[in-house]
Image (tube, rainbow, N blue to C red; front, side, top):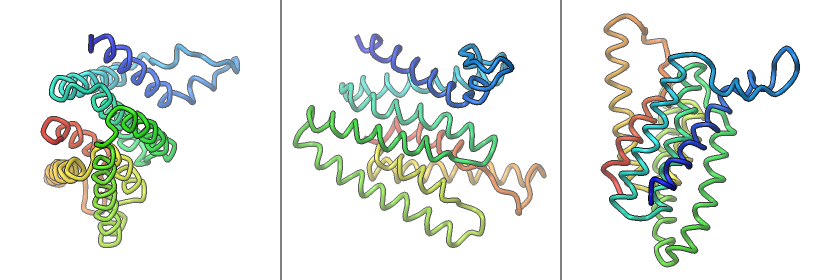
Length: 221
């Protein structure tokens, strides 16, 4: 039964993510017409990215539903990991985190809050409190980091973690932060050691946050 929900949902999220990433190619062409075929360009690396994003979405839904048995919780976290995929892709390519994607995440979370109020009632207050604590934690740490490190952490990273916190709650946000920053630190050391980056260069954070948040979804309720 859960496959009837997860496969169409993750497929739609994947198409929407690719549609956003390829929006310029879809809307701009020689004939001035919308070209839907441009959603999936003939690029092996890009197709591999979409396949991995789809697998990640399916994995999160499968694990969350089989562990908690709640469609809303599984759908909520699946949406988050699918939202982080294009954010990570754009940050890796352009060092930018689009506000529209962050706002989409926040709007979607409001919708999920309404669903949780209807389905869980008394549990919703505890969920909301945990999310607010996560919001203060994630934004607080990144704002502080932005003040301490020059050009190290941007407001895009702060807003990204604001959206993550609303989905993950306090402990999820904390664990995601720790894992993401740890992986980022290891990658930065390797890049410095191999000479691919210098100390003056910046490393896009969103790809590591994507990985760290994905890992977190297996261990933290």
